[in-house]
Image (cartoon, helix red, strand yellow):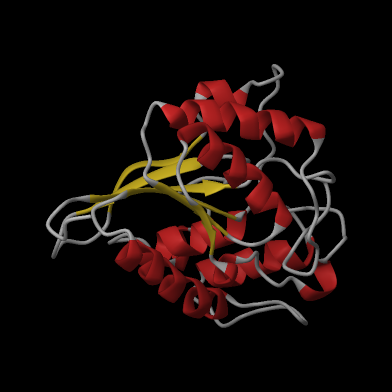
Amino acid sequence: MEANLETRIWLVRHAETATPHLFHGAESDVELSERGERQAAAGAEWFRSLAPTAVVSSSMLRAVRTASPIAAACRIPHTLEPALHERRVGELCGKTFSTSEGPWHETIRQWQLGHTTYSTPGAESFEEIRTRTVPAWDRIVALHRGGRVVIVAHGVVCKVLLLSLLPGLTATNWTSIGKVQNLAVNELVQRPGEPWKALSLLTVPDPIRTPDGNPPGSAA
């Protein structure tokens, strides 16, 4: 790709997992649910018309199973970036998901107060996730400069990247930018010498939103 061209990236959260009511961090390499497989298929069809040039995903099963149909439908390469794995959640792994109470609720509260080094036992802080994922993003961009790339990652990873890369956003905006639903798409563009710009944030396209008549689950 020529260096003077605009780079366009669709940052996407994976489809629904087999047990969406539980916390699945980097410690849990869970598969997609049957509904998640239908979401992934719908996502592949939606991306076909956008003509991406490459797909990159984390190496976790739920991201790979979401990304592979996109690559197949668009007939483009699918590569793995292991550093985009989901947040390590420590003692939360396998527990019932909740953003309204408990350790994850407190974590979000602390991050929004600006305490981005805060974490619960065994879990990654905002700063630790940023330190791991922003260089991975930079590697992908360098390899696909001027391209149109779909990146499939995880809810918390997507949000940390957005709050780290987009001008004017910080961890204090965690709640205000919205929830990261399954297969939520963030369309970001960058021209040489300019910052990243969001054309859309946390949007679930209609064909993906209702593959079986129900809205996707939400996280983060």
